[in-house]
Length: 276
Image (cartoon, rainbow, N blue to C red):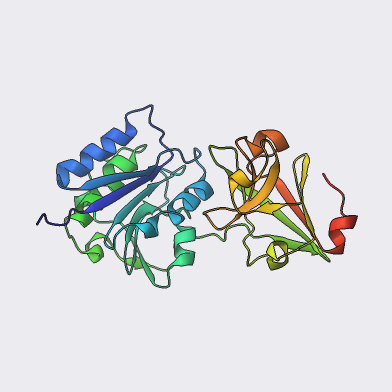
C-alpha cells in the first residue's frame, strides 16, 4: 500500500500567465518531492482579499484532514504585515495576516494562529515582492515534512480578521444586500443566505429582488428550470442567493457586477417597492 502523500493546496491571485505559480511549486517539490499539489484557484481577483477569503472558505473543508492550504492574496507584500500559520483541528493555513483567512476563522470552532518568524525555514535571500516563493511555500513544505507548527513562531491573538458583508434590514419588509462575486458563468452571487431572509425562500413567498436593471420575482431549484435568457434566483452551491439566467450571463443582462446593491422587498413591501 502506498503511504499517504502530503497535500498542499494553492489559492492565489497570480493567474497563470507568469512564472509565479511554477516557482512556488518548484520550491515546495524541492523540499518535499512526494507532495501532492492541488490548485484551488489562481484566478482570485487581483489584490482582492475578500475574494480570496471566499475562495478558500468554500473549498478547504473538502480536503482530507492534514491538508496544508497555502493562500496568497497579498497586496501588502514587503511591508510590516505578518506572515502567519493558522492551525485548526484538521488543517493548516499559511497566508499573509491581512484577513484573507477571515471566513475560515468564522467556520472553525478552534484555531491557533502563529506569527511566522523562524527565518531558517525561509528561502534566502527573501524577495521583498515574492514572499509566496520565499516564505509561504517553504513553510508549507516543511509542514508537509511534519515539522511541528510551534517551531515556526509564537502564537498571536491580534491577527487580522474582518466580518464578511451581511444583509441589512432597511425598513419593514425591506433588506439591502450586495453582490459578493460574479462567477465565470455570469451568475451574481449575493451575500444573502436562507438564514438571513427565511421569508424569501418560504413556499408561496411574495417578494421582489431588484438588482441592476432587473426585478426578480422567481426562485427556482435549478439553472435549467428557467427559460433561455430568463433572470431568476437560486440557492447555489455556496449557500448564497444567486441571481442567474439559464445559459446566459445574468451580470450582462442586469448590468450588475461585484459590489452592486441588491434590494429585497418582502410581503406587502414587494408590491409597493420600486425598482432601481
